[in-house]
Length: 86
Image (tube, rainbow, N blue to C red; front, top):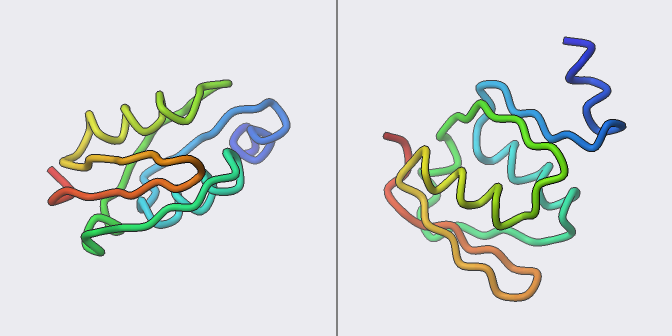
């Protein structure tokens, strides 16, 4: 979708049925943070969401609300844990 292709220019993050591993790569670039996992299985959970000028914590809270994923944010490091997809 061409609207999604220009989302970065418009300061929007858009995920369409995207695996967490791919979404995390975008989040690392967008927020200048580093992610790690305590459960590698959660990388395969898929998400659809759009964010516009949202702080990192708001994005992480959304992930937490749509799957069994918890986060711990320490400085520029984010650790994701939980059992994953619902």
